[in-house]
Length: 449
Ligand SMILES: O=C(O)C1=C[C@@H](OP(=O)(O)O)[C@@H](O)[C@H](O)C1
Ligand SMILES: C=C(OP(=O)(O)O)C(=O)O
Image (tube, rainbow, N blue to C red; front, side):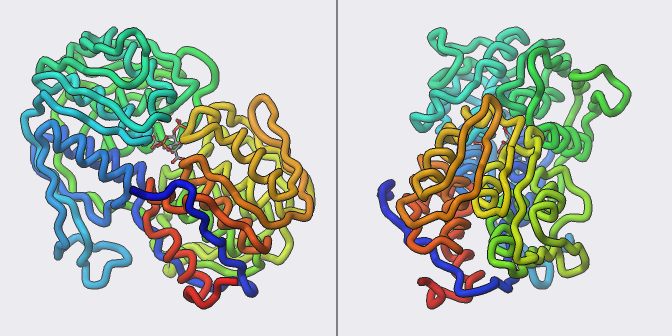
C-alpha cells in the first residue's frame, strides 16, 4: 500500500538545468493502440508502449474480456526510435472472442472508464466496471446514454456513472447517436474507437457546449484510419461536430508509440524556469498529441525551441513571461503552465478549461489552493485561472492523487526552496519513473538541496 500522505522534498535546482531526458511513451496513444489492436481481426504489436498505472489497467481490462496481451522485450525490423539496435519493450496483442463475466478496474483512468464500456458491448456476457472513488464522480453519461441508444443493456442503477455493468451479447446494433461531449472529448473517442465493430458502424453527433481536447479526437481518427477504418470527419468535408465510422474489420498494426509530450512538459518547464536547456529525443515531427503545443506556449513564455535530429531542444531565456491563452484544446497542459505562470514577470490568464473541474481532481480549485498556499495569488474564473506572480515560499504542495499536480509542484520546487510534494508516487498514473527522471535531469540525487 502506498502512503498517500508521504512528502517528497522537491529538489532545488542549483543552476540552469542542462539535460537530455528520454520520456516514456504516450498514455493516449498506448491506450488507443491497445483498444484498436484488441478489436482487430489479426494480432498486432505496440512498441515502446507506456507501462504506467493507466495503461496497465487498460491491458488488464482487455485481458479480463479474453484478449491476449504478451509483454516482451523484442527485436524487430521496425526501427524503434531511441532504442538501440531496434530493440525495445513491446506488447503483442492477440485479439479473441470477447467474453464476460469479467470485472474491469478503471482506477482513475478516463481512457479506461470511457473507452472500455463500448468494447464490453461486444463481449458475450456481463462486464462489471468499477474504480477509484474519484472514478464514480467523473462524467460517463455521454458514453452510457449513447451505448443504450445504440442498443446496449447497461445496469448503472440510474446513476449514469460508475460502478456499472455492461451486459454484452456479442454484438451491438450501432448507428446514429447524439451526445453532449462538452465535459469530455473522451466520450466521442470512446464511441469512435469501437464503432467499426458495431453492426451499422457509428455516427456520433456532438450537441452542446464547446468540445474540449480536439487534438485527442484527431488522434482517435488518425489511429482508426491507420488501422484501416473509414472515418468521415468535419475536417474531411463532413458536418461540424459529426464523426462517422463505417462498419468493417480493423487491421493488426505494428505501432511504435511516440513519447508522451504532455509528460515532457515538466522537463521543458525546468529549462524555462531555470534558464537552462532540455532536449527530449524522438519528438515527432507531426503529431496529434496536445503536448506539441508546448513549443508555441513555452516559447511565448520565455524560451526558444529547436526541432532537429536530436529531438526537441528547449532553451529558457532566463526570463519568464505571463501568458493569456485559451487551453481548451490542450487542457491537460494546464497544471504545468500554471506552475510556470506563478513564477513569471507578469499576470497570466488561462482560459477555456472549465472541464478540468472533472479531471483527476478539480484541477482549478487544487491549483488555486496549492499555489496560494506557497504565497501565490491565483483566482478561479468561470473557465480557468488568473495567476498573478508573487514571491513564493516553501510548504507542502498537496496533490489530490493527481499526477499533473505532482509534477507542477516539482517545477515550483526547482526554484522555490522548501517545497514538499505530497504523494509524488501518484505520478505513476502516467509516468512511474518521474522522481528518478527528475533527479537524473538535475544531475543525480546529489543535486538535491
Ligand atoms: O483521449 C485522451 O487520451 C484524453 C483526452 C483528454 O480528456 P478530456 O477531453 O476529458 O479533457 C485529456 O485531458 C486526457 O488526458 C486524455
Ligand atoms: C485528464 C487526464 O487523464 P484521464 O485520461 O484520466 O482523463 C490527464 O492525464 O491529464
